[in-house]
Image (cartoon, rainbow, N blue to C red; front, side):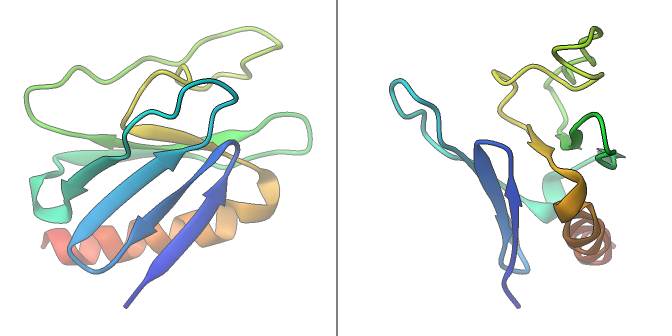
Length: 108
């Protein structure tokens, strides 16, 4: 099983065991964030709307979850620098929900 969700400036892939968040910035390319589904303590999901992008965020033990940034430019999403989250468009919100369901199933 391989699930991929295209996000805003990146993508999330899940192979049934490992989750990989790969961001594609304009500057230097950061290393992809990779972690096991069983290591996740929780998830946060906000679907995209007509006006704002949503996001997918994975919560891991020992790391502080980045909060949502308020304002018109951010639309209530975690900052781009958060390695455990990715902004998603309204068009890809359904695929993100399927990915999160698969991750929750793998966690249990």
